[in-house]
Image (tube, rainbow, N blue to C red; front, top):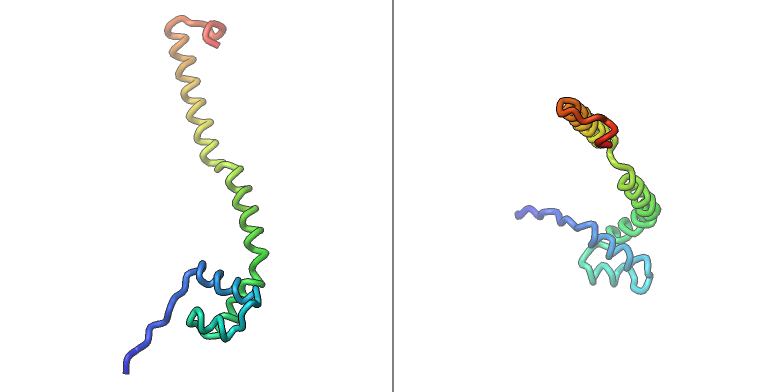
Length: 104
């Protein structure tokens, strides 16, 4: 007896099948035959798709807000680096006899 391996489907494929099921242009039996998948599986994917479709829009708005706000640790590191550079330039200017008013 040979052991059957379980087929794994990509998220894109599942979405495509679920969308076809939602359209109701074909019966589950026809879709099952077309995609070579059990009708129960198609029905589960359709239900899951309908339950989670609002999450798609929530996560995209969350991503855009994260992209707009840069990482605070990076900003603090950059501020620290600029402060060190500024202090170095001030000390160097003093050693060269340049006043703060001349180089501002």
